[in-house]
Length: 400
Image 1: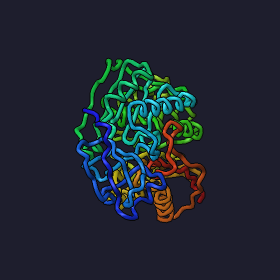
Image 2: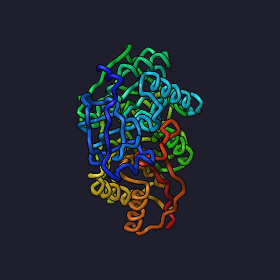
Image 3: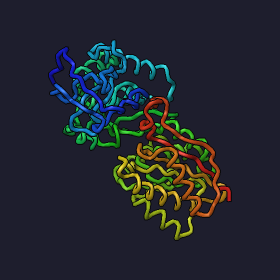
Image 4: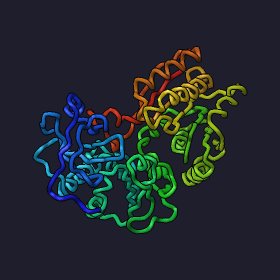
């Protein structure tokens, strides 16, 4: 894509619509924009001003998205060029290199939190996996790839820009090798365990790196417990429960391919395969079946997929979250633990807690909040961007 000239188009917001920008929120929606003069290339940098002409920031223009502007900077002295992005990449990589995450897999760039709205960069050992999820990041694509290779010196780069989000930006899905070849039998290490990774076909960029610290917590609380892991994927929580001394682990997922990899992970780590069973089944139906059978567990883990990708899905998602949590609460033994998660950005932490409270009320049991869960430190959250707090979880104990 040809980069723009030094002439920067000026966009003005409607009167009174600059409040979120003053709070340094990185998005402006289409309804807040008064004029979009002179812009002609999706993703190009524009100067954003208030209705009175006061400078607000520099942003990437996305003409087909409801999120019309994504801010690069709120500093008028900044120049949005290759040097600007190189400096930001250096800062993001420096932060990760100074963090101890007990793994050779980590997130190097986490979108808005690192100043790259719509860009995800994950490192799995010697492999980089990229997601360009906004037209602004797509605009700077070639520059960023070149800079990333220069800074990391890694020789295998793979793209997983194959999510539905790109369609909302007017972009085609893309998936494939950018540099080098993916290694066969690809394995990463985390907290003393090893996992096979499917970068090409796996969820997200191949693995749920955001749950790293939470997997370690599950290992700590699993000793001598009968564990049920729902939506288990490739077995991250299940393996940690086994490593933590669980009596037995029942794991459920609808993907036969994910379960196949979970079994391989169990065997590779030398864990007791006779202490686990893997069920290819619907979680909702399985929970009802267990309830009808009178099955009980000491620890239930609920880590469902994103039920609410947008605000329009919140009501339906809330019903689904309540359904599975109510069923899980009924399956718990007295004193048992429920680790319940939501990865839906449209479900706020407050709403998620209300859903769990409503589930407990209908289950007619009292629960204590023992702990909370969030994404690990390589997935930082921007204070001015609450939408970035997509992963939230609560550890509950059944008291009565």
